[in-house]
Length: 596
Image (cartoon, rainbow, N blue to C red; front, side, top):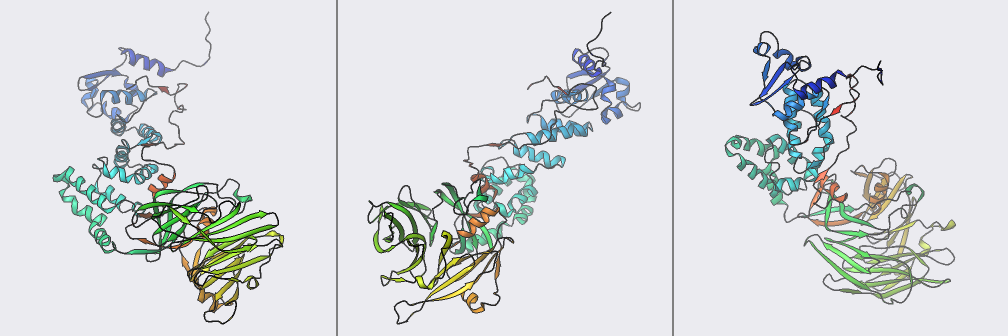
């Protein structure tokens, strides 16, 4: 007597699948599509409510034993029916639309779910994303990452023919999204014109509806009204953080080098943050300082000893080599400051271990010249800590001498005078904590350590050797402070709020409470919050400069390294439509053997 190797009964579905493959006489129902004919088992087909009702006695199919279909194709019909036999269909974009139509027609919700799960795993590309969007609209399901894919590449889609089949509501959704303001108005108008020309007769009545939804006339008026104007902005930029940022100071956790492709600008007239994309990316290091001069974005490259700049109004880039006064000396620290067509370089020179000096070198910046020649105007003892230039062309330099004493010098470019104002600062450098900052303000400087602030004012007309006075201000715990021009900004570490007030208001109301104006600030990770606040500056940008929404998906795509050549995007779906069906008597969901 023969004994089997397993005690489970053989799968009935395997036998049924074999009978269909052999077109056995026990297959008692014929399915037709045009000239295509194939037989299946009635007791399998009735799993579909459509076939169950079709074979009721009152219908002709009950008598003839045949059903003729007019949806799908022979291939998709066979795959859909074999799905009832436990055979997994091999889906593709070539027939996914027909397959979903069959799932709807045959009243098979599980098969529709299989199609949706497959679409969620399908790799998006510029050739298939519009068709998937149509399926989402037709069968009322959502795939969130598809909209992000289109939004980030809207420039490409509007220039091509991919979206000419969209309905007016879909176009209105895209054009009314504030995040997609990076798309030029002219390109939108050109697309709408081509969209209308595609089907002039059927879309003639939809033109007014579409124009109302996206408000093209008003957008055109706004563009013409502001063409010659400029925006006054508060600009900043963010830098990447190191992996061990929680064990490092802010200045330490900046990476040695990173690519900067955009600035963040807060427009005072609209009270909104926008992205100001540079037409050429800048490679910056942890010691790089971005400076703005009118409509110029300028920075110094320490490795190449060159000053680079971009003219946002003319959309041009330039480069000038820096020629030091004495290039043979060994530099152990330097800082570049570029303001009002003038380059200021503060250099710490290590002559020997007991004789460290800091010098100030100045050179005139001419954007068309090949080189900037620096001249030394001031030398002092000590190692450089911080420095800045204010609106009165006065330069502040903080150094620490061999006795760990804080030294504060002010150089006035108009009179070429140097003032030692070290006695006006009362900050201790005990334990070698050098976390001291100096900011340029109107007619003076602000020196800050922690929450202690020294306001140093220039007293005009004072007939004294050192025409400066000091006012002490204690800042509030839990805030970071920054001084720009005649305004002081503060950043709440816990509350993540940016506020501002005039420096005169701060001094007049001190020590009482000060009235602060709130400024909206994007919700970012901690390290970016700190980096953005530390790099605040003022700038005037042309109204025609390419600005876009702070959360612009196109900018986010470029930040991830998109070059325009990548045409696809794979979204990871957590589900798995290849799992075994617990209700099936088969050991697995058998893969289909058809390949197209």
